[in-house]
Each structure stands twice: as C-alpha cells, then as structure tokens.
Length: 274
Image 1: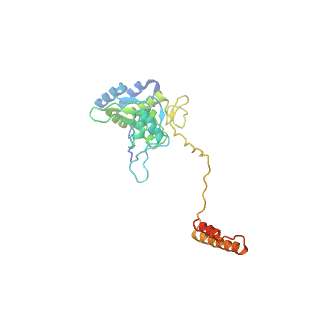
Image 2: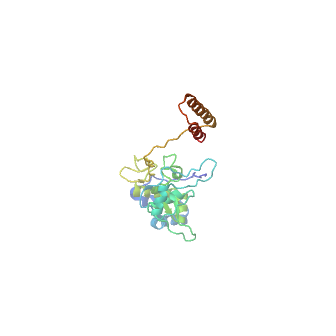
Image 3: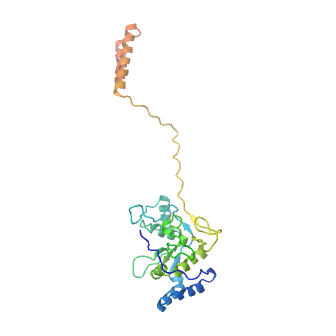
C-alpha cells in the first residue's frame, strides 16, 4: 500500500499541553479561509461530539502490523485463538481486512464506534500516528500501521466522525491536538515529543499499558507407556531365516535330537507365516 505522507505545512509553534485551547487558537492563524476556521474551531471546542477514545491502553497483538507481504497490495488477517476467545467473550466481531486488528484493539479496550448518519458503517478507526506531520525539529513521525508495537495500540486509536476524520489528515495542528490528548489521557508518546524517556511501547514511566500475549503451548501429557517400533523383515530375510530353520530341523532329525518329523515340519510351518 502506498502512503502519501508529504505535507507542505506543519504546526507553527511547539504544542502547549497545559493550554491546548490557546495553542490551537494560535495555530488557526495559518488558515486564510474564515469558513474553514469556523469548522475547525467548532470541532475542537466540542471534541467529545466528534471523537471517541478507548477506555484503556491495550496492545492487542504485539506481533502484528499492516505491512503487506511482498507482491501484495493489502494484508489480511486470521486471528490467533486467544484473540478469538477474547472477542467472543466481549461480543466483538473480528474483521480480517487490513485495519481489522486495530478496530479489534479499540473495541476490546472499551472504545465505542457510533453509527454514521449517511452510511451503514460505524465511525472509522483512525491511527493518530499515521506517519504524517512530524513534530518541528523531527525528520519523521511514527507510522503506527507499519509497527508491531503501535498498530494494535488502543492509546493511539480513535473512533472519529467523518468530518473530523478528514480534518485529522488535512490539518497538522488538529492531528497534534489529538496526539497531545492521547498523551494526557494515557501517557502515550511514541515520538518522544512530550517526555524525555519512554518504554518500548511509547509510554512514560508510571503509565500502564496492558499487553496481550499468546498463552504458551502446553507440553503433551505423559501417556505412561513407551512406544517402540519393530523393524519390518524383508522377503529376502524371511527366506534366509526359513533356510536356517529347515537346516536346523534336518540336523536335529539326523542327530536323533527329535524323533517326530511332524514336530519339525510344524516348526517350519510357523516360520512360513512369520
């Protein structure tokens, strides 16, 4: 899948976590169109009507990303048993399409997807860190879909109204408003913009992320007996053994060790049926 991540614009000033509303108002000065400004102000001032967050930070599938295999345009998924069991328990329907694992993580972390007005679909699930809009002074930003530690990380996912969904992809300061919100809510900082240190999953010290790991495979129980195999005797081997038995029988008759010829031939008959 090709991603168009280039942008001619970015945020004008470093984000102010202690006063996001004032910071956002300053960023709006970049927009010359008054109508666009009013839409952005309206959505930013009433985010709860346009954005839904997960209830907890959950890394659902640490081995999973959305990078397609060589020669394929998309990547589709078959879920491991422990995730299927989680979804069944919480009545979450799993989707094998490219963004399905991210949707599953958001839902299993307690996130809600309101229905859309003009579609039978629910609100989209959007990665806040999409590889677009690096922070000032940074050459790049996290591309969650390409990283196993971030693709199914619910702290970096939102359910988003179609209007706000377009805004996240169009306006750098709106994207960073929500990234700042993820940090304040979960301590999630995959780019290291808001903190001096973080763990491998992008969280600052003292903040909790639940990581789902597959249960280890159990060893097969001891059956209590040993299984052995006997070599299969070839036809040549059987014939050689029969000749030996025949010679032994004749030698016994000649030496007087047996007097009943029927006994000898009975022994040879058993040899034929081995």
